Length: 111
Length: 116
Image (cartoon, rainbow over the protein chains, first blue to last red):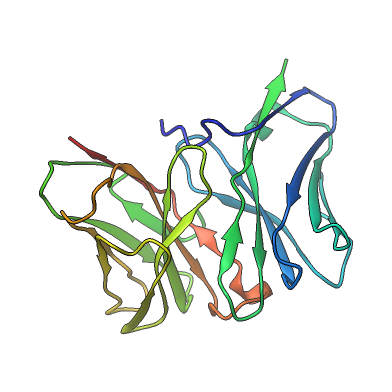
């Protein structure tokens, strides 16, 4: 399959542990942020989003934290499972402008 | 994949040939996008369309062309002028294309294009 994650930073996590994936965004005017998951050979899949007027949002097993002071976004995955193995990337959006995508982090699950 | 389909999944092209990648969505989204993905790089925008019969160049439009004759369809043609076309191509759509939460982009499964 397509290897879209070559040369990306890799995070290795033991199965069952929590994973924290970080993203530094570029524009202080960005007001909307999205996390995507991309499995090998597939298109990116929407995971969770957050607006700039929030600092935390929770979904099913995932939490996104936003720190606007340092322009930092993180994705926390609870009780990491083998199916979580993928490349994760963040995206930032300024109202009326296009979305900017990060390069991504590969999450590797250790048995 | 959420209502966005791309075909074919794999495509091989000889140098000097044009090739067209298909993208269809049944989400009733106004906006559609084409991205190119290369190993170790973020998604790069090729073209986007916010409404039928209108489209704009993205960051790397040279060597590519698009059409938007129908709301559901946004085909991408990779022309012989594209110097390095081997890549993974992703199509996406969003409700409005104007930004904010309604601009969340949903992606198709991708087409892997290889130039022989």
